[in-house]
Amino acid sequence: MRAKILSTGSYIPERVITNFDLEKMVDTSDEWITERTGIKERRIVADNQATSDLAYEASINALKKAGLTSQDIDLIIVATVTPDMLVPSAACILQMKLGASKAVAFDINGACTGFIYALSVAEKFIRTGAAKRALVVGAETLSRFTDWTDRSICVLLADGAGAVILEGTKKDEGIKVIDIFSDGNMWDFIHMPAGGSKMPVDETVLKKRLNFIKMRGNETFKVAVKTLEEVVVATLQKGGIESSQLNLLVPHQANIRIIQAMAKRLSLPMEKVMVNIDKYGNTSAASIPIALDEANESGKIKKGDNVMLAAFGAGLTWGAALIKW
Ligand code: UT7
Image (cartoon, rainbow, N blue to C red; front, side, top):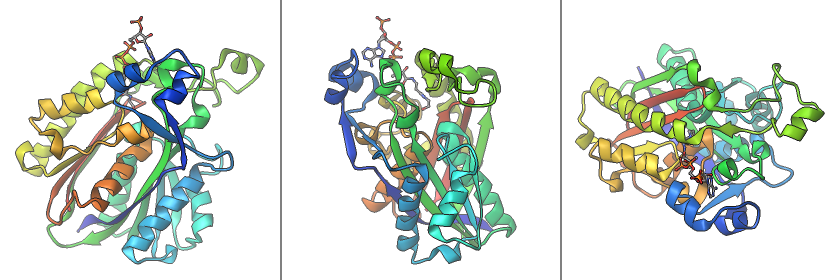
């Protein structure tokens, strides 16, 4: 038995922040942001929206497209680093909002690789028969943990949510290979120093702005390009196909230069690479399911296509999945 994606869904908050808006907030320029990252604008939540609200909209979208109700779901996994609160999980709040009373629900923190982590866990539930139908969501409100005075990070991060519904199949389709990895030695490449048990938020933390995400961007960049290429090559090999047989690569949207370098190393033309970072920025765990939904909706993916998902992020974490659509 394999797990296959029955449907995709997404939700993008309405509020747009352009590079020109950021020019008025920090010492940056549209030219720098566009050239170095590929981002032109990003979406930010409304004041009354939390991660579970975005996750809810994306989930309803995916359920509708699959012709299912929340009662048909017995597993909910939300990949996020920005849950509504530390306790309980965003997944339990989502379960309540959906009325998915038959499901078990929990979060996974795999940072920008979070969606592939969650997909990997859900895939095992489906393959072993422990769950019949799973709702896997990537949802983030990174804007709440962004230092809007730090130009090295505020031009990158954004909010959004994407979801997929998984079901078992006995046919030659669905998730063929999925592998996830981590290396905690580089935990401080991307991290939020305060707000956890190590450094509770107090006045000093607020003054030093330690309750926001920090990133050693340039070092992360170098590891990301190399690791992403390696994980895609290994996943192609495991799946028994060449990169030329890939119909679409859906990478985590962290930086257009990382995506282009990866495509070049894999000899993949950019037409076979899903890119929407220009519109949405880096939405961490949400970026792959949002991009997957956009690709699916726009007809970029057809039945039988070989689709590769690949991500890299804080932890460090990385992973890839080869799907026969
Ligand atoms: O999503 C999870 C994983 N994350 C990633 O994979 C992100 C990886 N990293 C990156 O995408 C890139 O490293 C960044 C986009 C974060 C930065 O680009 P970079 O080409 O690595 O720039 P840099 O950090 O080496 O900085 C180059 C210059 C510096 O100025 P000096 O020292 O050369 O004078 C920075 O101070 O650019 C400056 N700079 C900026 N200038 C204008 C940094 N941020 C900005 C900014 N606007 N927003």
